[in-house]
Image 1 (cartoon, rainbow, N blue to C red):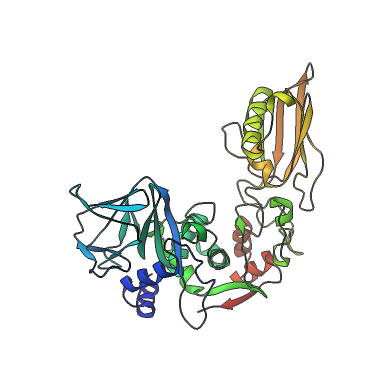
Image 2: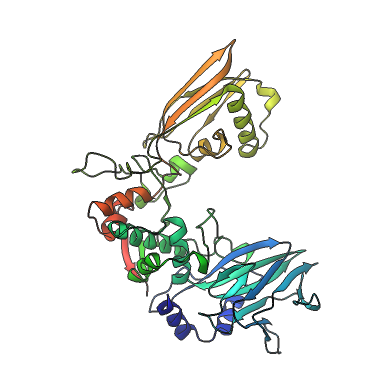
Length: 428
């Protein structure tokens, strides 16, 4: 990772200037960052670490600096032992030092950067992050952003989205690095109205900062440095999920969104294999069972969240659950939930979030192989569902990528298998 950060330092200059550039591009207004970069420059990504938080506590493992963008005064140097607090009052950021003293307020963007990027990275709470921070007030809330180079960002995503792997699966790690990099570039500015590019959660990609980095994952990032999946429009939206269950899905099936040729559903096997590449996943096949009362309660709660205007009293008690049809990738289309006075048809990802497992977690997949129930006096008393896969199923299947790697496929072959028709381009 030192090679990546040193390269960024050479290309972008002092970190304070990086903050200035990011602030001018995004800051409070949130204009989108560039969707990519050619000619050798690594793009910067703004991650919304704390979007509209009550307060944030920032510091560093070494000395660090805090300043206001556009202010004539030099940034304040702060010792490594000190954690400062940022709060907001009526659209102004309030800066409170380690002693609890208010050091000032500003309607402008504040930036922080470490004195030594490698040995003294910034802290948000007790988590370390590469890059530097930008912060501003949104009413009485604070937004904190980590402005970090794309390669360092991907190195802190890969361990959480796929995790360290044995040597036999290194090609899957490299394919995942390309997918994560491609997704990032294609989604830059997604949250531009909030002043950043991506969230550090499953809403986009899970980003854990410096503590998440692992040597094998960093190696995969460095070995694929700058490599991005592309089509005629630019970087592709390289969606991925844990286990496709034997067939990936298209966005039309899952989210009712227009698809792209590279995101069409594909069978998760080749002509010379007998089993799906993801058949080694612990979630390839699964079963769940509920009492009728459990299932009804969970579905009612799920419909309250997913469908505004859903009227529990109007529909009455649960009388049936059935698999009324299947999509091209064999996902429920729809799963029909019947009540005394009407029915609700669920399809795509809605199946996973309306139908919850007995513990309250979302159903693993919408690829259902069996739906059975028992009834007494017209009401459902038990529901049993069997299915395959884990996640939305669009794009690359992560366990499938591992299976392909173990079968001897390269990272380019894995990537092209799941994103049919997409090219590979080295952006820098």
